[in-house]
Image: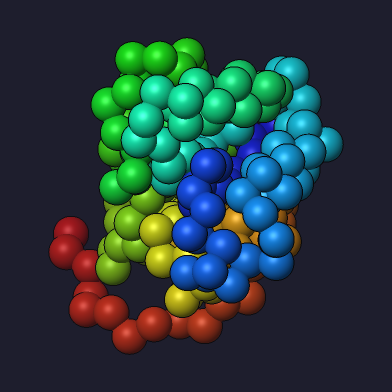
Length: 180
């Protein structure tokens, strides 16, 4: 069982292609590419952590289409809710868990998962890594904090070892000292 991370999939959101200069000619092409990537990288026993903005759907047809895509994603799906994750996702999609923010431990590594980038987080001074989305291609990450958004991962999810490597390679930011 592996832990795999992604964010900002925006299934069904045609305008995100222009907003973020995504390399797709249509929302159908984008959705299929991302679904195929998830199916290649996530196994049935894996935990997939989606850090918000999984789908953009307003009408019944869009919601049904997005739900059908999400149901084709393998693994145990956990949603860390983002600003585009509306209540229908909670009611109509089966999630292993759904939170606004989550702290998990994988082996010896603590992770703090939130849709939004944080300035500081629990256990940061002890090596906890923060994963976020929301900002799309505006920020790759900073020391111990990694953008899990598909825009930074070639529209595929990231494995924990990739996240750790990127977290250690990012530059330190000048944040205020942490409170005890």
